[in-house]
Each structure stands twice: as C-alpha cells, then as structure tokens.
Amino acid sequence: MIVVRLDAGGFPETSQGSLRHAGAGGPAAARNANGRADKREKRTEEDWRGHMILRSVTLAAAILMSAGASIAADSTAVEKDGTIWRDADGNPTYKIGDDGIPDYRTWMGYKRYTGNCMPCHGPDGAGSSFAPDLTASLKSIDYEKFAEVVSSGQQNVWHPVNSVMPAWGTDLNVMCYLDDIYAYLRGRSDGKLGRGEPKRPEVDKQAKDDAYACLGF
Ligand code: HEC
Image 1 (cartoon, rainbow, N blue to C red):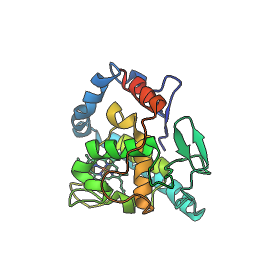
Image 2: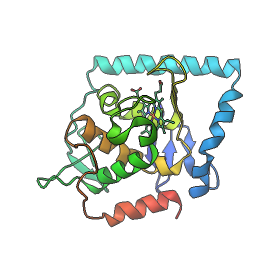
Image 3: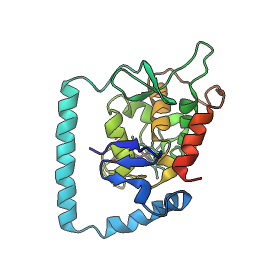
Image 4: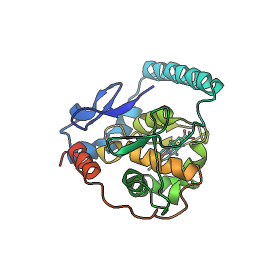
C-alpha cells in the first residue's frame, strides 16, 4: 500500500519515493497531472498483469484488516500532531469545538475538496452520477486505502465501465492537503459536519506556512 507522509521539508513522500523529485517541484509539478493519461495508454500487458497482482495483494490486505474490524475506527481526536489532529491509531481526524467550529486543517480540507474533488464527487462529498459518495466510501476504506486511491487512482470498482478516478500523486495542490481532505471527509462521513462550508476557524499560521512550503512557494 502506498502511504503518504510529509518529509522533513514538508514535501509529500510516498512509499514509492519522495515527490520532491517528481518534477520541478512547486506549482510546475502540479501541472503534471495531465501527463498520466498517456502513460496509461502505453501500459503494456505485462504492466497490466503486475498491476492486477498488486491489486489482489491490496485486496487481501484489506480483507485482513476488515477481519480486525479496524476500518470503522473511532474518529475521536486524541492528540494534536503539529497542526493536524490524530485519532488513537494515529490517523488524521477532525476536531470540532463546542462552538461548532472545526480545526483549521479540517476547514482547509473542505476548501481543497471543493476545489479539486467536487467536480466529480459532488458538493460536500455527497457523490454524483460521475463518482461515488465519499461520505459512504469512508465508512469502508481506511486512511491508507484513501491515500493509495488518491495517489494512484482507481478504475472500474465503483462502476464496471469508464469509471476512472485520476491519480493525484504528483499534484501538489492535492497531495499537500491530503490529510486535510481526509479529515474533512471523515467529519462528513461521521455526520459531524453538515453540508456547505463549515464555520470558519481562525487561521492557523503554522499550517498555512507548512502548506506553502509544501507547494514550493
Ligand atoms: C475526474 C473525476 C474525479 C475527480 C476530479 C476525483 N475523483 Fe475520486 N473517483 C472518481 C471516480 C469515477 C471514482 C470511482 C472509480 C472506480 O470505479 O474505481 C472515484 C473514486 C474515488 C475514491 C474511492 C471510493 C471507493 O469507494 O472506492 C476515493 C477515496 C476518491 N475517489 C477520492 C477523491 C478525492 C479526495 C478527490 C480530490 C482530490 C477525487 N477523488 C477527485 C472520479 C474523480
């Protein structure tokens, strides 16, 4: 499975390597997103077989994990790690104050979701005729699977034909905010965040600076 973390310099790093070298870095790398369609067409039969083997391994791992009932994990925020809240298992999560205001990273997740994912997955993660309802998906996929699908893409699982989730692995506009988007969708999936823009928290300057560093500004 591909796990994405930020390296010491705030760059996303996957188990396949650091995105620091995925292009010129910064906004230029973000524009690489369109290059991937070509690669996919050029995929040889051998590549495809390798891909299918990988997929079955991933599936086996997913089945094992569901046996441990760890997927519908408790979203309660137990610890703030830098600017992101984490649950007891260390996965990114949201924290909503008594005033109904979420933490900054969760609110940012709403913004980034709306900018990048909404065109297909619909407003507020609720799904559309193009792409699945992510508030439902998050009940059955865990953080690692989420990170893997967003980084590497997925095809024809939700619908058997022409159902393509693009790979965002080299798009810093998504990867620098992966945890934010996850935290937001988790809050939506748990019914703790309603539809529309969540109440706006105070700006977390550190989170903003970290994100800009990740984007290469
Ligand atoms: C061009 C349209 C499009 C965009 C933009 C898009 N997705 Fe998707 N996404 C899809 C489609 C279609 C699927 C279903 C793929 C399949 O059938 O395997 C999907 C599947 C997924 C899944 C897996 C759901 C499941 O239950 O298997 C996740 C998670 C996901 N998308 C997250 C995102 C996030 C986060 C973003 C924004 C960064 C995003 N998507 C942007 C089209 C899109």
